[in-house]
Amino acid sequence: MSLDDIPAGSLCVIDTNVLLYAEQGGSDQAQRVLRRCANGDLTGILPEIVWHELTHKLMLMEATMKHRISPRNQAARLAEGPEIIRSLSLYQSKVRTLFDLGLRFEPCTQDDLLQSAFALQSRYGLLTNDSLILAVAIRVEADGLVSSDKAFQAVGEVPVFAPSDLRHQEIH
Image 1 (cartoon, rainbow, N blue to C red):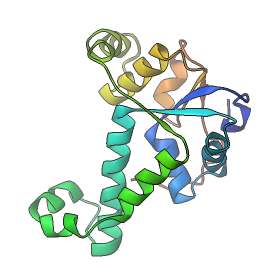
Image 2: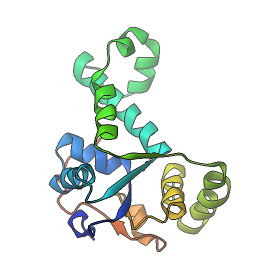
Image 3: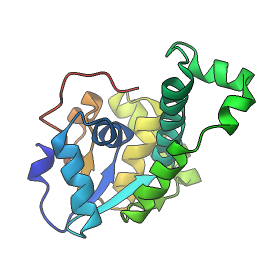
């Protein structure tokens, strides 16, 4: 189902990739989902792991843009250059804006990892972060999981909504 198919009033767990597509202009549907969250038509929840992953990726994108760091080994390059990290702030503003839009922070619990996520990994072959996102979606009884990740298409516990209008660009 596309992101435009999410019923009004739905509680949605949103994956990092959809946020990046919205940020980079890679999907009008992703941008509309964020607007719907901002106006209260949808409740958007970001699991703790999504906040971490998004913040890290936005920081790397800013460093690449400002300092022309090669997309290769960005994190290692930044770890060697704390002065570059100190010069970055745009990514922080972008993360704060998501809170201002009303997106909620949902902590990942010990049970999410040790019980649910590991079981979901065994069942579906999901990567660790993806299994944690799904575990949180199940725990909060989400009406939908919003992600472009194809691995979620085989999941039966939560309806999955994906952008159907992706412009072919790689998200970083």
